[in-house]
Length: 266
Ligand SMILES: NC(=O)C1=CN([C@@H]2O[C@H](COP(=O)(O)OP(=O)(O)OC[C@H]3O[C@@H](n4cnc5c(N)ncnc54)[C@H](OP(=O)(O)O)[C@@H]3O)[C@@H](O)[C@H]2O)C=CC1
Ligand SMILES: O=C(O)C1=N[C@H](C(=O)O)C[C@H](O)C1
Image (cartoon, rainbow, N blue to C red):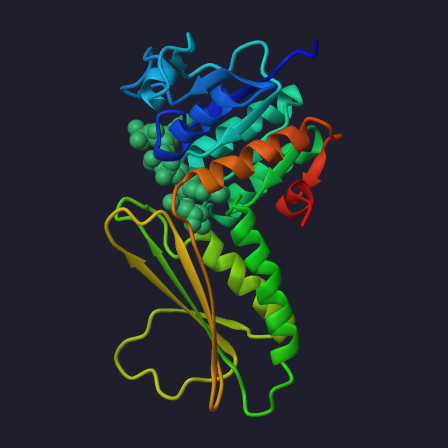
């Protein structure tokens, strides 16, 4: 019988971390190896399964990465991701890095783990979202030839507790489209008298309401017609499920940087 993969969950007491703990616990071939939080977390010592609502699993929340962890899944804060990436790099532990809102310097620090460990850094682990990114790339490729111009706007909605804006996913949608269409300016909201809209910009609009788990609409606005590409999360399990697939995938790879598209087979 093959041994289960032991998964460390960084940010284990958070909204995403709890769902990752629950899904790992329930999935054949995976078990929760460590439930990590920062050293001043009020949840230290609590049982991770009880926090996640799946009953006692005998894994206390801790700030120390234990001895036997086969892979780590991180949904925390930028500082938490930087710290766990350093550890994973030092110990050659595969890392699925899902935290968003990193500065350029923090991103570089995280990426350096890929020299010694398998690493996947993506702002969205959902199959539906990553498929929609492929559709957006294809739309941008075709529409860049429209002579009367195409206005691209990215609208995202998230829960009131989200700390970064716009979402990492919105920024990635924008980057994918700019890579195809060539926009050079990324404009965040508009007010006052910004004047006529130039073709060189992509606009971003971040809504924060209630308990929305994540919704993105990419608007391709033209003279005479509009395309809206929308993808909506219903529960956080769409992200958690993709992160589990990514962790299994990384456990079979050499050190290096991998994409969520590769892990999901898109
Ligand atoms: N890539 C993807 O598919 C997705 C990414 N995300 C991203 O994941 C991140 C977490 O989201 P969410 O779960 O909603 O946020 P939460 O705030 O609910 O969870 C984050 C958890 O990390 C803890 N934490 C804070 N600092 C550290 C640290 N240094 N080390 C370890 N843990 C720490 C927080 O503790 P405390 O509350 O005490 O500060 C909290 O328990 C966000 O950046 C979000 O954008 C979210 C969904 C999908
Ligand atoms: O904070 C969230 O909730 C989410 N964050 C990610 C992001 O910033 O793109 C992914 C998802 O939209 C949920």
